[in-house]
Every structure is written in structure tokens, then in C-alpha cells.
Length: 128
Image (cartoon, rainbow, N blue to C red; front, side):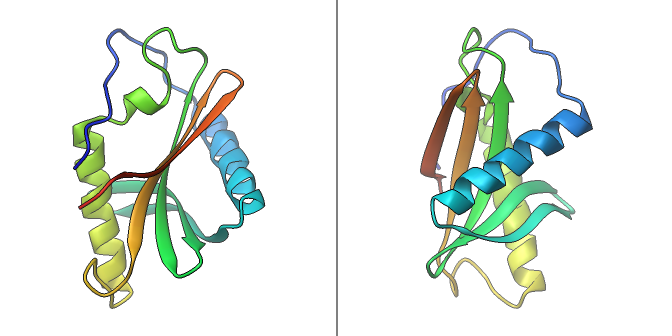
């Protein structure tokens, strides 16, 4: 599993409404890049996956992050090892509910990070 550098210092949490707005922006951005929407805000025992998209035959689990500035490392830096682990477990549960697994379908984990006015799409940011 790749380690995305983590930030130090505190940042205020987004409201649920703000988070939903950024996730919607992320969905539209990814659809313009050719991905197809599958699901949003998928909750399982381990956590939540912001977006599930499909890129050709690959299921893409997307973590959406927003930070006002890069002062504390930017949005991508906030996807810690612990968060990656939760996303992997959540995806595993979601796949099992659909009679699939990491062994039976091609999957990847992307991060779509909005830092100020910058957009960073990290394809295959980490893996199982």
C-alpha cells in the first residue's frame, strides 16, 4: 500500500453540505474524463466510500478531498494510511455484497483532491 504523505497541523472540518458539494463536483469532473457513475456515499461496516465509478472495465473507488490551501500539505496529503486501510476494507465489503472480490474484478483506488483552485487526480493512489 503506497503511503501518501500526511499533513501536520489542524484544519477545520467541512460541513456535510460542503462535503456533498465537493463530491458532486468530483463526480462531474470524473464523468467529463470518461468515467461512469456507479454509486455515491457507500457506507459499510468499515467506513464510507465517496464515489464508485467505472472506467472501462475497472471499478474505481474514489476518495474526494478538499482543502482551502496547501498550507498543511494539501488535500491529497490528508489521505492517511489509516484512511487507506478503511477504504480497502469498505471496498472489500461492497464487492462482497455484489458477489465480487479483489480477485474477480479489476479495481483501483483513486484520490481526487481539490486544493484551493487546483485539482489533482491521483489514479491508483494505493492498492490492496
